Length: 422
Ligand SMILES: Cc1cc2nc3c(=O)[nH]c(=O)nc-3n(C[C@H](O)[C@H](O)[C@H](O)COP(=O)(O)O)c2cc1C
Image (cartoon, rainbow, N blue to C red; front, top):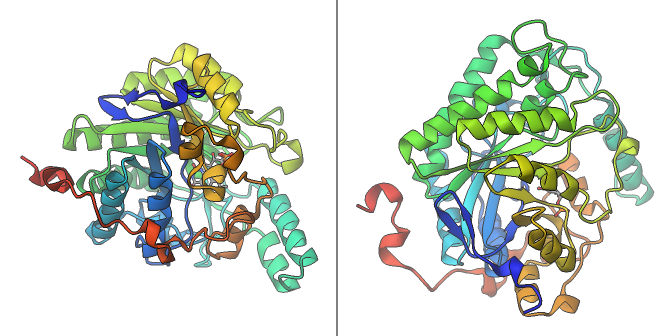
């Protein structure tokens, strides 16, 4: 087989994953404002599990009441037992199709997101202008206008970002406590693990970034202080779920560096990796940090652009490192072979073609429907519309395809929630 390494078993903690292809988290936008997992969600992830990925990371999923109040679009929620039955049904269906299931939890957006409730967004410090979102929103609104899709009102709505208020120390403690408590619902719902979202300029990530964090208390100032929220957050969640189930997998998704414009650096990230490893996390998921303006970003079309980070992190970490933004199976095989990463995570390629891993395994690379990297799937988020894909018209409509109904393969005992198995 041409792609041997990609189809090797991977162990994260004591969990065995059948191959090195995973689905990176995407908030699906197929659910409503109650945050319940929808039938569209279940069929969407069934399609990817049937397509051969070894692991699916569901989410991001909002895990605090404050986060729900500050939501900028329709996320899945995990804040109470009312969310558990649908989350459990999703986990069961993913398992039935042969993949493992993690859930990515997000405590709250930061000032990058515009709350639809009209509430002021929160940030480490007040009055820090969110330039990136501004510019990105302008670009997206312009694109929409040139396509004749929307009116000026929408452009105005998405380009005037409200100023944030400073999140209080009391709120920080509450976010940590509530997230640690609500993370336990993932255990009850039958997931194999949890991924802690600390990236992409949402609230925890903004604390790391000196451009956003001007605080003078113990959460601001030097490197240790700027990372205090993140470290306390991860420690609390890791302790909470492992108290519930000691072999439950806990991973982190962390931004690598912001570039040369005053944000956190890769040195900060390497230092943080050492700290989090000592807390007993089970894996690291690489991602980008945010420059303030899109123009400062690396070429978003470059394949494998995070591999230099994961390769460096693998020298420090004794746990598996997961890496997205690798669309070529040839590069993926090479990266795993060279030890630059342990698992290839895909988001857009799997939206474009759910059967991507299966086709690689069967040596049918030429049959893969390739993602065009045209950002079409991201635009819907700003507009609170369901996700769509420019090359895959079935995205979000999988529930109408009989192929993606799970009917067979029930495995009795294994399907019972872990609390009832003994
Ligand atoms: C539509 C969309 C939604 C996303 N949502 C999330 C998210 O909720 N959490 C997260 O950590 N990353 C999110 N990402 C980032 C992806 O997980 C992934 O890192 C990124 O798309 C690069 O990988 P790719 O080239 O395989 O798409 C999202 C990406 C896209 C395109």
